[in-house]
Structure formats: C-alpha cells, structure tokens
Length: 259
Image (cartoon, rainbow, N blue to C red; front, top):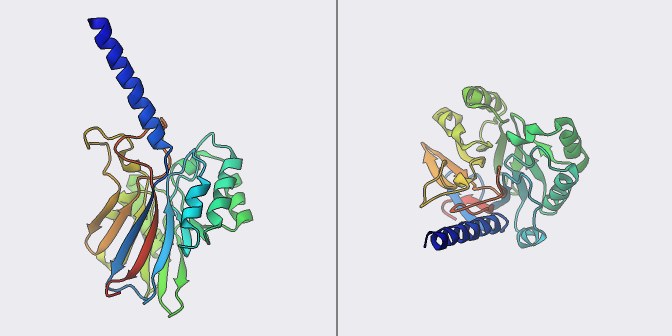
C-alpha cells in the first residue's frame, strides 16, 4: 500500500514539474488600455513592454503578433543574466527592433554579464539605454511624453536613484518612469508628477501555491496619483518553472481618458 501511495506521489510531482516547465516556456501577449485625464495628446500611443527575458529566446510568433501595433519598445531590465550567450541577446534585440525604436533599462541580472560587451551591442544596434536619464517622445499633435529610465539600485539607494533621474525630468510633460523594481513606488513623491511606472523584476512570484507567492502578482496598483504597472516577466529566475504566474509581455495603449 505504501509503495502505491509513494508511486502516486512521485508521479504527481513529476507531472506538476513538467506542467510548470511547459508553462514557463509559453507566450502570453496581453493588451492593456491605460487612460489618463492629463494625457497630453488626442492620439493613442502604444508600446511593447517586455521585462525579465533572462535565458529565453523570444518567439518569432510573438513578434509577428505585435508587428505594426506599437510605436516603440521598452525592455524593463534583466534582458540577460550570467551564462547567457551574447549571440542569444543579439538575436532577441534584433527581433525587438522589428517593432520600432527600442529603449532599455538595467536590471540586477544584466550586471552579472560583461557590461562593456552589452553596451557595445546596444551601440551597434542603436538601442537607447536610459541610465538615470530620459527621452522626449513627441506626438504629431504636439503632446510631449517624458520617458525616464532609472538604473538598478539596491533598496537603500533607490531614493538616491529616483533623485538622479528626476534631475533629467522635463517640465510640462507626461512622465513615465521605467524602473526594473516596482518598489521604487515607495520613493515617489507627489511633486515628482510621475503618472506611470513600468516595472518587472518580481516575476509575479514565479511560483504561487494556492494564490500565494513571495511577491505580488503582476498587474496594476496605485500610489497616490501614480499608476504602477508590474509585469510577471517573460523568463524565469533560477529554475525554469512557473506556477500561478504565467509569463507575459504587453502591448500597452496610452490615451486621454475622454477618448
């Protein structure tokens, strides 16, 4: 009897691991509509947001499904990690460039690699790296969007990091902050006038048991007047397994609330 029970348990465990591994390799493209009363344009702006790629090779079908539907691409950190061949990173970046201009912020795992080699790759491919700096995206009707990218900082230095990037913020613009870690929201002040934060890092907990995980599931929450959007990410950290937090990338449409 015990042999049968143990065998059933082992088979169940093996089946669960197979399921978790298969889930971790799937592609889910989510479309998100975000509207703001003070969005500075009557046009809708769309971006492809992907975070935490780690060791994965982006599926061609995923790129095809987003082709022609976005204005630019934002990589929310952890494009790679230690041990990932630079050729794979190159291939992923080339695929993302098919969708439009690409912006990148650093994640903690990116710093495990040869940073100089990665920087050279960004230069060669024309990827704009936002390291405590920003760019202005201007719409055809004159709306000005300030995309700000903060470098990766450990918790005790995130306030300093936010101060650094806010020195680059432009007055009279709609401010979007790209931060690898969503916990930057604890540092944001009303006077920063950041309307949207885009982040990843937590993988939505990656493995959630009965809905519980080490981190909040990806999604939207609000801190004062700031909308914080966190992705579950595309890849995995550590074991290539997921449960209750499927991998995801996003097309995010930004528009004025009265549209």
